[in-house]
Length: 136
Image (cartoon, rainbow, N blue to C red; front, side, top):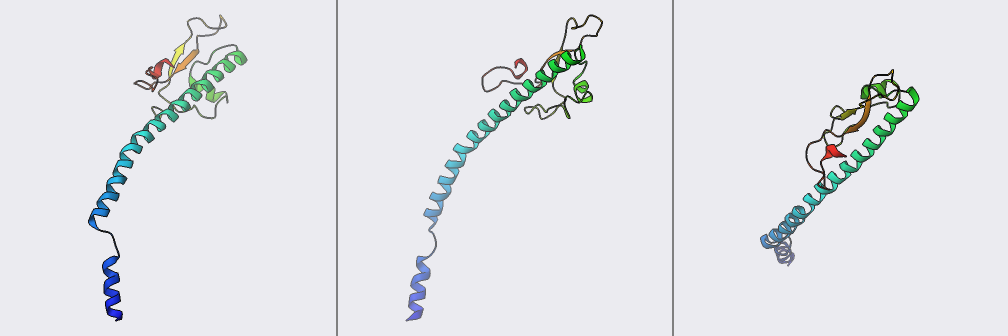
């Protein structure tokens, strides 16, 4: 009698192929929906970090200019003068060497040499707001 009970139980355990196909199909649909959404969220977070880094660099450039009575000649000057421990990374390009610096036409102090007036991202392409990253 025990043998019959075991054989009946073993036939009832497990999943059918149809059940497995349905579950896998549902998982694939969820993945197809969530992956693009995840990528979009990650891009928006990198854009938020880019805005913050641009704000910080511009703030430090103006502080350096007011403190030293001249604009920094390079971004490395901000690091050397201990305004930054390390130049922030452009999160879109993944490098701190891709910043585009905009130089002054005329220096703040006439005897000083022209320095950095502004900085922009060196990333190519459009943001999620359809503006070029270099215009931020």
